[in-house]
Image (cartoon, rainbow, N blue to C red):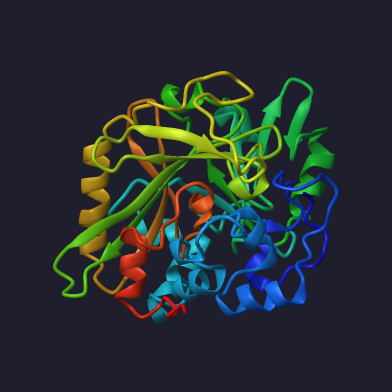
Length: 350
């Protein structure tokens, strides 16, 4: 089923994805009675289809309306998490964060290491090979994120090749962007899908007494032809639950095939089920320790990538988290649901 009708703010991340629960080509349009029933519970029409609520109990799922209540949970302290240009300087003392080389603003490449000097982007690309261009304000789902690199034919920007002069002109047209260090991922993730950065989403929650932090859930994302160069699930990437005790991935899911689970990546054939995240216990322990020393944050959604030396790099920290993992693993009665319920974020369903 292809979703073609406009979705509300809560459902925008599901726009134009392909679902296969019903006949291909049909629109998501519920009878008014059903629409009102599920809207009262906070579900969009797209979620009704995605979670197959015609056959599954809505009481097992956290609705999009409830999920959006996570956004303001950190209050005024959440502002720093949304300021990607300042993120490195705020969190680098505590975790490894990709370096921000320059800020593209008002037709200038502003050198973040020495604003008084010019930033030689072509020289850096020839030396480093590639950088990541991303907007300073997230647009969600990896939108606007792409690789910038040097090649034998010139310079590549968003998969198009330009000679140096045209490349610089095109680059300077990117308003309020930044160029960030590209992290070379560990082979365990590279082997699953080599054409995207494959990140781990780890969500930690502060206990009410602020004396300990819990791991609420974790899943691994892997890119696909539809999502590359990102691993965004909303753009067609795959995602697999990570067992919090062992760091081992389960079967993968995709919102493009919500009824299916995959032991292997469908495009590369690489195993996902049983895949071990290297250094898992240490990774979780370190992230929980950092969160504990920031007790003003109720919830942190970490996006992490491991490099070839098993060093964890925090790509970003989100104010809230998508709950797309619920496609095959409902979360309302799990740790995430209990965390939200304890803070009054879940509705009382009849």
